[in-house]
Image 1 (tube, rainbow, N blue to C red):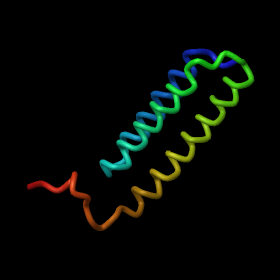
Image 2: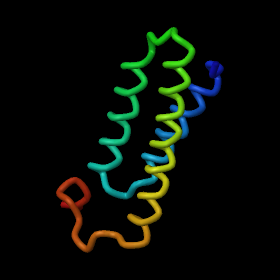
Image 3: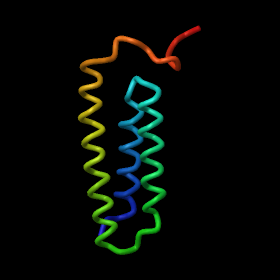
Image 4: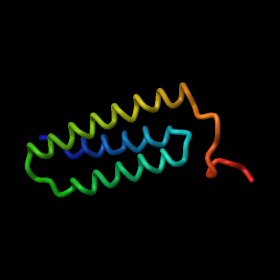
Length: 86
């Protein structure tokens, strides 16, 4: 079974990875999606389901990091409305 400290570490890693996106919308989406996912699974007690949810979280962390590398390599040419300085 996965330890509580490993789950907390995974949550923090996902939040940190999401904060690295320069785009406000993507940052907020990853934050919201991460917190919603952990809140949805906070009452899991079955060890196999906990392990499955943890494995899915690790896969999502890999996806976030991979997409971040691509996003930073090829940034969008236009800024969204939240990033414009008035």
